[in-house]
Amino acid sequence: MTIKALVISNLYPNGEFPRHGIFTEHRMRNMVRSGRVEMRVLAPVPWFPFRGRRFGVYGAYARIPADDTRHGIRVRHPRFPVIPKIGMSVSALLLAIALIRPLRRLIDEGFDFDVIDAYYFYPDGVAAALLGRWFGKPVTITAYGTDLTLVANHRLPRWQIRWAAKRAAGMTTVCKALKDRLVELGADARRVKVVLHGVDLQLFRPPADRDAMRAALNLSRPTLLTVGHLVENKGHHFVIEALRSLPEFELLIAGEGEQSDNLRTLARDCGVSDRVRFLGHVDQTKLPGYYGAADALVLASGREGIANVMMEALACGTPVVATAVWGAPEVITDPVAGVLIDERSGHGVAQGVRRLFQAPPDRAATRRFVERYTWEQTTIDHLAMFEQALASGDA
Image (cartoon, rainbow, N blue to C red; front, side):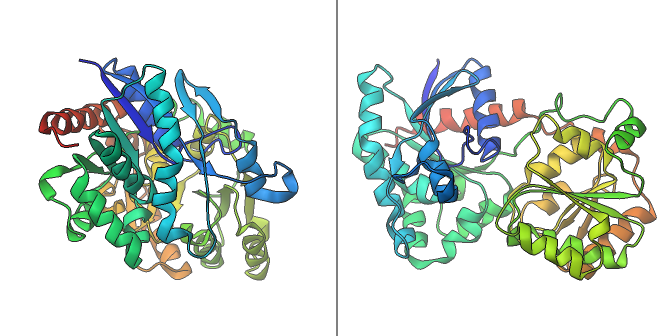
């Protein structure tokens, strides 16, 4: 039986934001590759009337095409209204209303889907639960991280998440810590499955000649790497501060974001700007080279489900220094994978790096450790949840 799945997620890459939610796209591509799923994707974006670059991120939203095809998957980007200040409380309802016409259009075109599959619990999952009720379709929802660790701390979104969890025919989380949080919010534990994200083991692999790769990147010191949006939660600033206690190390920072200028200023104020290199956006096809050349990835996040950059680094043979939050302790379970830090600070990061390099793991062992995490297994686990949800008859 081929399952017709309608995916709803604002976390999906596009031409303007090529790495935005790329882990969702990986998950979808592997599900389609299984031959057991026919899929359409609705990846809504905020409505904005002007396309000019002077309007920053909102202008970029306006430039995203309404229809696209990525890796053989049809993707549509419906617009939905975003209301400042009160937007969080009503965004799920506004999103659901905005998606009624695109859903009807899909059905009229012959894609009468079996299940609505939403990624990110709020607003996407709540909107999907509303649409499932209106269209008489079962709904599955996947929680990624901040949807439960941050958004659910707000009263009205929390109430809506609880309602959607009761309506959902099935739910997945990317780590056990998020499942525990979802159950704490009132979800039925029997309908929540932990489905770990995989990693592309063909793309992310150790370099054939690591010394040559380091030379090509002009790396001469022990090298730390951070990858992710330049926002406070990612903790890049703690890694920069840690360099004051790690004089022999240099740091590569891959990513763009609102904290870019602040981080550059911090590097100067800490006296380490000569040992910090800001790479900006790095295309995913080039990331394996940086992972493979680095001596450690540092992940100083305050909130994460399972960080994809952590899995990618491990697949390239590079150990990880990560804060012991949410999903990280479920992956860093062996010294060959790296070390966990309890104190999220510059001092804590420096201590973690020192601990790792007291007995650095064999890079081949690090690679072997992560080979159990495959997108194929993610697909098997998610499809099992689909089948259970469809068999339940909940809609």
